[in-house]
Image (cartoon, rainbow, N blue to C red; front, side, top):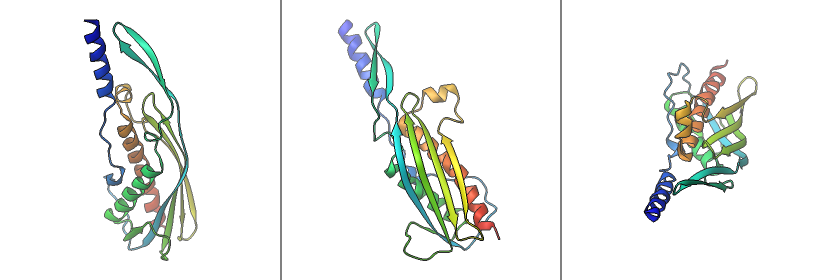
Length: 194
């Protein structure tokens, strides 16, 4: 009987860790846009420090809980691959919403504007699968250059229940959506400035 309980607990903990990745290059910005232009821009991402905390949790085994710990997991952090996937969504949404006619990743061609999104630091807290993104957007090519700073916490709009029931992929997607919601209006304002 005790062996069955241990096997069920082990199976439940293994299945609880299974999650389907959410692609960050297909995010959508659904707010109405008042800015429309025919300008072209280079939109690039620069990766910075990628950090993560060590996590700990209690694993139920039989009738007791055993403390377990884990170190930072590079695949769960908001890493350079995730940042580039986010950049694809940002470029696509700037064009889809009419803010720019072209938003390209290449810096070889001369464009009207340049938007550089710098991920100064990303931090992953595995206890709640919470992501903190410190990002700077540098916009040039307009009348004057502009610099905006953002701090996004993936769980900032979550209830306690949502915080406890978020897996790493959902946390990454929440952080990326929140960053998109902050970046696009500022880029649109810069594009619209005379």
